[in-house]
Image 1 (cartoon, rainbow, N blue to C red):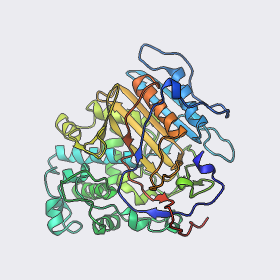
Image 2 (tube, one colour):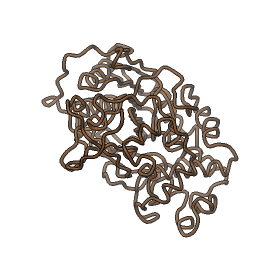
Image 3 (cartoon, rainbow, N blue to C red):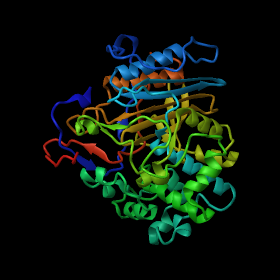
Image 4 (cartoon, helix red, strand yellow):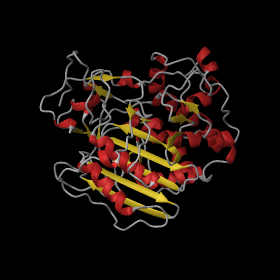
Length: 438
């Protein structure tokens, strides 16, 4: 396993909005990952395939294989129509061996962006926001001048604004990762840092993922509704979707049952460090929500079936632009990925120690949400890029393909991690830099 290296890598913080590729390569039967001898998983239910296409035994087997390949703990929820399955495998705490459970609360990172986009589009339907209007019309004090006139609301939501990401400023050193653990960030401060960062492109030119876009979207919501964006999203998106365990945390602590969340930093933290206690104000309306896998499936089902948005706004949300990966296109806080069994909509999220995938068919009938508690476990290649062809990634891809396509014996094209490397810790070749304080 990559994090088992006995030497302590020196590392640095990279503040960049370049998306890290996370390839979902599903092994064929001949190249399937052999499951090491490890403690059994704790999948919630047992059974056989049913007419819905949910193969419970296969889902349990592939989720256990994810843990056996080296993932600490994972929880997953799959649906096909009215048939549903939930399972868990591995440990929530590596020291005590406490097992994971299917309903654990989890930091969902950039999946928050879909919630924020829905809230903005609700205001579009009320005529209070114009997607084609310049953001400077609404936030002239934050985005003034030519940029305020050139960047539209739509460009924020589909990441074509060209605005840089603020993470390079707030996580400028390895020590700042620990230093910001309890720091409360003001979203205006984050927005200004992002606007001061080097632009990623010209407005409207191309898709460049940046958290700053969705912090600005949150400030836009506050301006037009008179409420904090978190309060508005909670009332008009989370509650409207019928979600019971999805919330913006009020502190660095999670309030319900949850796993510890371990960051490996590509070997920079050895052993991986627990970041389950962390103030996510630095991510705000771009990435601070907590949820469960069942809640995420419910949310995307409500969204795609038209419960949260009027048809015109849902069409706008699903109007996409190309990304660097030919298998993925990005809409308004929502991406679509082409798999061999069809096109799926959703998002993923990455924060320190926690990653999540949530994907649904266009009608919201076939769904999968997966959370896990060990991140940046890969090795780095000679260019400092994560190697995503290892056993953990292969096992994860097999489980996702089983949930969405009904088979783990397939090849699924690479799907980028659209959440940029927030506090991306790298071990650059030939550049000895101070390791973080422990």
